Image (cartoon, rainbow, N blue to C red):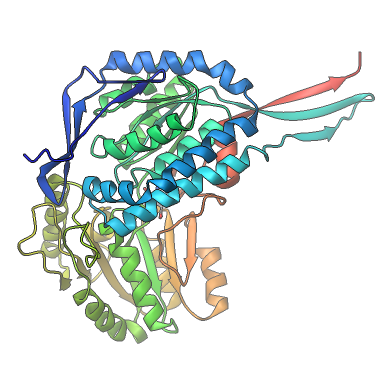
Length: 482
Ligand code: UN1
């Protein structure tokens, strides 16, 4: 084990950075599993209870703090994040495995999200209605939920937490946050920025450790709301528990996102965007393109050009600036993806491209393109969460749309066409939460709703106006003069 530059992990509970007394956690670099990026004691279930109590104790004063003041902490934290973007982007690449360029981009995106919600503090409005009764006005005001649990995945270790924690805080909630145990260092960095920005004690609490901490949070009687992004299995369990306890939950889960390339598409643009959608961040985005539906007339030319571009796509150490793709998050994730590829081939898939990862570590998965004769294949149905693209050829636009809808998931879809009427038809017929026309399936702006149709999400969506809906509840006031 190499311990050069290893950062000591700390929990944030009631404004104090403390060492967890639970099992020791070592966060290693997936590109070099013997390099420990951060290490320290994890939180115990008792630590979670202390964090929940701290969040409860801080809730009333935080809810009474003017929104603009709540927003100002976020803006200050955004500034701190921007100042550290190079260093933290590099740490992100070491800890999670995406390239340092993408890591820095993600860090800056977190700052952008904090700035967006900082300003949202000036915008939260209620509504005033007329009343059917003389002398009465009806007002609808918005209030925080109270104590919110935040459970976040490994794949965007700072941006996803920012897009949950920032609206939670600005709308007046206090937070107990459990990040994925594979990326605790970046979680600490975001919490540090908010603490350094002067956030009052107890308003944000960070507990690092395994999934059992999530159970402790969701079952805690002080929990007033839960926001989750992660696997479908975990999300559904959390949703069932939360529903049983009457706690509102927002769960963002799986995707099996298609890129649909129609005959009239701009070939160069479509290839580039499919390449980015499928292989950036090593395919580890819930919005990644994992299915490609290509119309017959363009299919051969498209596949040939994609092949060419993939031969130029360099996989390697994510902090090397010449590299476009790093490893997946862990050796065990890589093993599962490789097993999925083997099962797909056994079920009839043809390998159209397999990248070169010779000499790289066990967490590296070769970028892989599989062509399928039909949809009866695990690579068509199951989310691999890795650099694997499953391709099917179709004859008509109708078939293309039907294939895009042929999934239990409905998070995002990318359509490539130069024909506006086809784009309009897709808006009607493709059943997804996010539709991109002539851009990759991944990517999301903070001021518009984010979330999926069908089984990709459960509960209210995130971002934009949707965030306000989830992180506040309304009080309807019938106001009459005495
Ligand atoms: C993006 O597409 O840039 O877990 C964001 C995920 C999503 C975020 C995607 N919640 O990948």
